[in-house]
Image 1 (tube, rainbow, N blue to C red):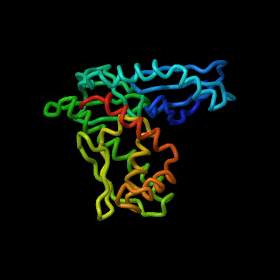
Image 2 (cartoon, helix red, strand yellow; image 1 turned 60 degrees about the horizontal axis):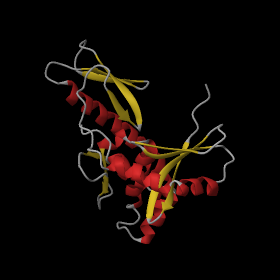
Image 3 (tube, rainbow, N blue to C red; image 1 turned 90 degrees about the vertical axis):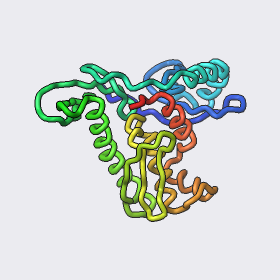
Length: 238
């Protein structure tokens, strides 16, 4: 089976609103729109012009805005009870949790599966958070190592945070904090937050110069910033 076509984060203005969407080109004949918990997703033929794609989105603009508003108004999901077979988003994709009573408390990541071995003093939910934090540290460290050299700065020290409303921060000493719950979100969204915080190593503000640094690292930052806000409404409360 050929690999899935990559998605591109973009944004389009509908009325007075800027709407983020994910564009995937594939061997299809028509342009299709769909909206789910991830936001607006557009499928298009390989040769479809971007102008035609966004014209179609605007033609269905009210439908798009109404559907997105309906998703935003939903109550953020509570953390599901952690049982064998529970699914949990990891980097934007559903991962299945498999519980086993064998062995001491630990975890293991397989292909789209998280194996949890809870112990007597560590229930599955707490063990899952430990596993996700461990995975977050690994992924975030890798992404910092990818993007920091592009900016010409050393890879900064990383700290994981648990803030409920803040996804990242950069200290005056050059350290970067990233919210471990970002691990639930698609990798392009994680990259946007990483690039945003790295840009603060050059500009410790949100001036036009700061955003030009962000754009240097992450040209699709506007669409990804909107995607971050959408994802924040739907990731589980763990």
